Image (tube, rainbow, N blue to C red; front, side, top):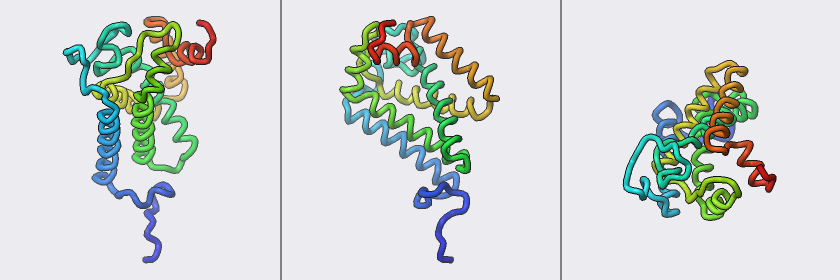
Length: 193
């Protein structure tokens, strides 16, 4: 057979391994590459404060963006919702597994870029926001898990429920810590809020 392309694979991805085992290997490779990049950027594995926790709800504490989850985890759920909607719109014929790998890669790329010195300075120097010194590798993995949760929530919920969830998460973060996608974006644009 001269055509080596797989009929169920997205165009341009025919060189990637087929089947569940191959897709799991690609997903693990994405996570390993993210961890390696963060380690190379001198991000700590866990909180330099000496504790490891599943949750840190104080954006001003030493564990902010260092523990597994924090208030910003809600924004990563929203990012996962947005990724699902975007990928579904841009590549509607892709199988769910390839949409998921694209979302996972997008999350890993975001974590890699978010923890560069330029981005740390951008977020850390924004007026009216808590101090930001970058993520621990543990927190980056937590953020990635929350993106995955958002991705699958968007896939499983009706659109109105998904929109309600996103608005509720944005409202909870804005009300609780005075930050979020909307407020943070306005601050980065120099709009006083």
